[in-house]
Length: 84
Image 1 (cartoon, rainbow, N blue to C red):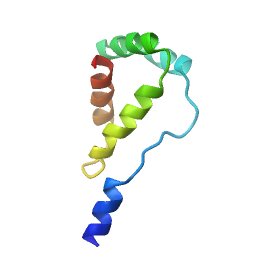
Image 2: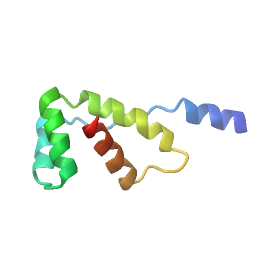
Image 3: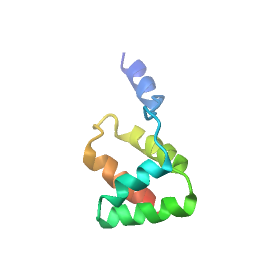
Image 4: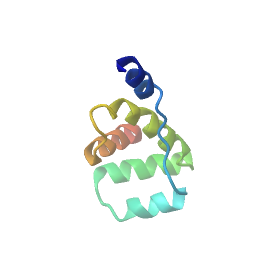
């Protein structure tokens, strides 16, 4: 059982349900005056897409599954992405 659980956790795939585009993300971020929002908005405007953000976030969050994915974890990972 332990090996099966380990295998499943190592091979889990995270995806985001629903359609979200760059304009929707920009709108969310414009309503938030935090430093993290401004940095992310600037990065996304340079990239012109949210694809890299979503792929990077899904990949990084996978390692948090055993501990739990919380609002704080997601916020920290988005901030790290924006500053990279």
